[in-house]
Image (cartoon, rainbow, N blue to C red; front, side):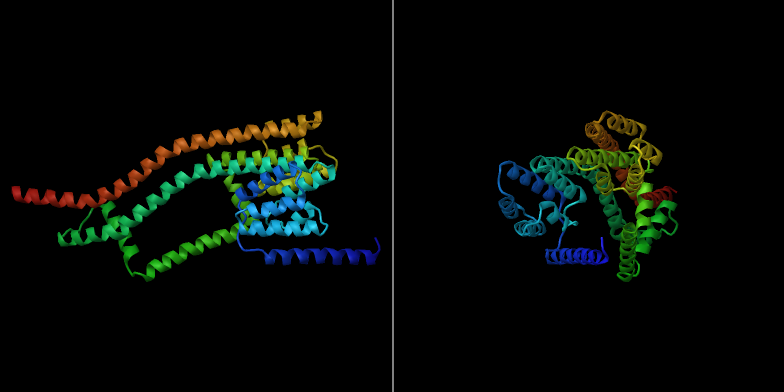
Length: 384
């Protein structure tokens, strides 16, 4: 291309990028929930399959959706399409709302003339992904609730109840207390002394740690360290690995069956697995494939994919049924995740209850021991 052509292309790309930023700036604040996006995809698929025109579909969807941000995005899609843009192009201008996977699927459907089937596959994929997220969140909700309850009970006892016992012990003349009682009293004294300046300082320190952790996770290095550590945590590491593999297989298979080229599909898959270790392995495999290798060997070299997955991908590639084989891998690992979550929840429930009872029991015993000692001394003194 001549230099002038390159300049014009660059200006056009810059203009498109600037227009996309202006569109994003006009949208309401907030995040589009996966549930809202899944419902939108299913309704969109149903309307298109019924023969409703694209503009009419988007008008109906804008009225249906409850999310203000998603409604504004759908209205913008309708304006873009009425202006002559394709659906995939319009979706590509909202990368914060529509993942690369969705845009790639729609583009493949437009090129292949099978947009109805593609939208149906997209809706099915988003529903499967949402179901997986819900299972993980619901399984983790109970332990988190128990831990929060335990923390609240301990904080209440240490900051409100123990100081009253400290006064009682002082009135009884108890100066020497058991070690566990003294440790709790020291902790209570530390938390309640200097109110409210010390409490504000502790809250600020906790908030600083949380914000610092979030900021670290936004960096490439921090996110990589976190994701790598997550894969090696006992019990939870296996679960995280299974979730990533299930997403890899489901996303890759959905893209391939919709006609998306392998290299483009792998780029979208890397952004969908939600783990930088897997994402980097997929992108390295993509580079090797672009240089002429088949899919299996670079996946094996990465060390993050189990041999079964590598073998099934290799067989699928050799037989020309890679999309079907990936669907089987996804089904298998989604069942594995479901079974692991059920086992984990069943195992954690009694452990968490016993732990909560143990912590509260420790505090109660520590508070009662000095009183028991005092009563024993009084009884002995009276007997003499």
